Image 1 (cartoon, one colour):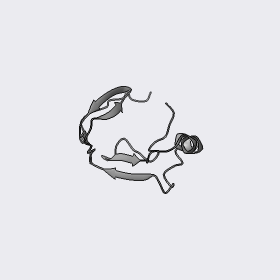
Image 2 (tube, rainbow, N blue to C red):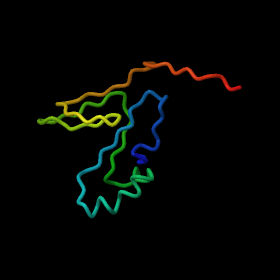
Image 3 (cartoon, helix red, strand yellow):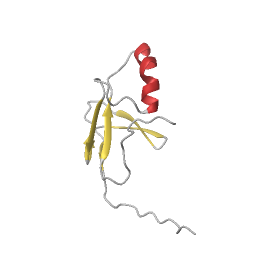
Image 4 (tube, rainbow, N blue to C red):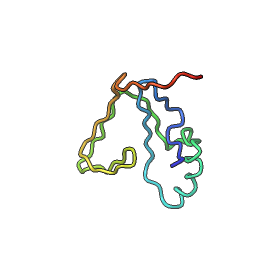
Length: 94
């Protein structure tokens, strides 16, 4: 918790904010984990940041994923945005 992986992400823009970071050694991880936590990593040359409407991860093996705290494995998972899929109703301000 508390990590800002995609600090520019907006819940209402209809886009998936997607980053990839190559495997890092323990020393490199420790060097960069602070800037990653603060959301200051997007300018680093080894971080690839994209916005898209659909993402498909291709791999010959199952990929371990985490979504909202749940961990599961899936082969070639695909993610997409469903515009206006939920409606949020908030009480009016008094």
